[in-house]
Every structure is written in C-alpha cells, then in structure tokens.
Length: 75
Image (cartoon, rainbow, N blue to C red; front, side, top):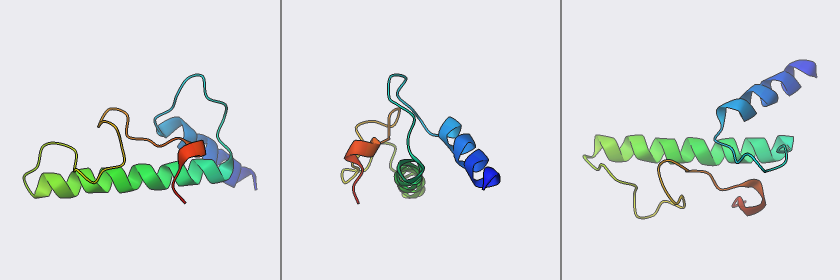
C-alpha cells in the first residue's frame, strides 16, 4: 500500500494546485488528474486541428489554470 500512497503523493506534486487548499484525498487526486488529462488531450487535439486557443466547450477557465478543484469536480 505504501507504493500506492507514494504514487498518489507524486501525482499531487505534478498536478496544478492552489497553495491554500488542503491536501486532496486519494479520490479527489484521481478525479483532478482525470480532468487535467482530458483538458490536455483537448488542447493537443485542437492544436492538431490548427486551433491556438481553448476550445469553446472547455470547462476550464484558462490554459494556465486548467483545473476544476475537488469540491467542483464533475462526476
């Protein structure tokens, strides 16, 4: 179980974060990672299609801050 906890802790260091937010739970970390991966995939897809801005359907406010925080994650 330690290796899973270590992996989640490492994942938390990679995800964009808000300094004053409490540490995310395991499930929150996974949900935020899923949303972030989806966002990055849409950016790459749009780049392949010649777009240079966020897609209109993006739930994220800006490319610099593309995360929906745990209490607001869509389930």
